[in-house]
Length: 457
Image: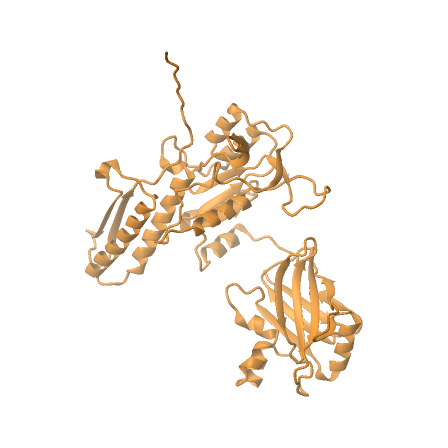
């Protein structure tokens, strides 16, 4: 989906439209893959830096500072700064000024020419008629967007951005776009448990890319319904994790009593804590994925939380939710006070004893397997003997590092070794095919404690 916007300088106003305004004295065209809602504004400030100009570009002394912001909390979405060009965009600039790269980089059009992975705008093209330069300056002054360099008077025009008409992607489009991403997604987050086609689409991606799906089952007012919904999803895979937040809270930036408590999904907080944890790598670059995001050390940061009316998570409720593999946000009492925590660390794997029913064990498994596959692909198309030696050596270095980091535990069947690795040419085609076999035991997670105490004489 592409969003196309035009910032138009008119004789007595500034507008932002979704189609070109031919009567505009000057315009800036933006093309982006992002969509905007009704709460976005553009802030325009234009400063005269008194730099020399040419007759064919008389407004080259004006620096346009354009900010896309949220009008609710004034947070900045994106900001760009540059000068107008008479038309034609980056391609025209390159043709007309092949030996003046400094001139090109000063133009707003240059932002759209970068075309990097993290660019907000795909294309930016500015247009104005040099014969109307005086009219443009007068128009900017009329809307209080123009100021001379060195003055302290604030000059800013604020214009509403029209909401983008968004068409939901089909499950097939979701699957293809995620699979085709250059960077392999490690986590996929879904907040619509009722949208079965989307869940099926991300489950396909999960299986193909060996990543994890974090599914928030939504605003449900009783634990029996939450457990029943979890059972109905029926994706019995260790890479799928279900979460339920049966609580309400205030917005994080609320400063008014009118900011009432509302329900919100918890998977955004969970994902944020996952990424922070993963950034804490050791000297070998291994993240502490053996530490599940749950319990005392990973409390939620939602403000003034309280349970939804009618929700009571007694022992029966918690047992039923655990049986359904639902990780619930609940309040737990500790010696240092109470905390709102993720009360469990369960996947949707259908087993009572396998390590794969635990989130951290599942994450260790996908992390190690993906790394081994990546190393195996790295050494492909070498000579067979060189492949076996090089791949074996690098995979063992990686597995030794993960063992030292606590991700793997000794395997009883291997006489206490942390892993078993075997890389050999295949018997049926030893010239071009290789078998890699790996045995490992991931770290577990202490979910339950059985306490027995005795009083003696």
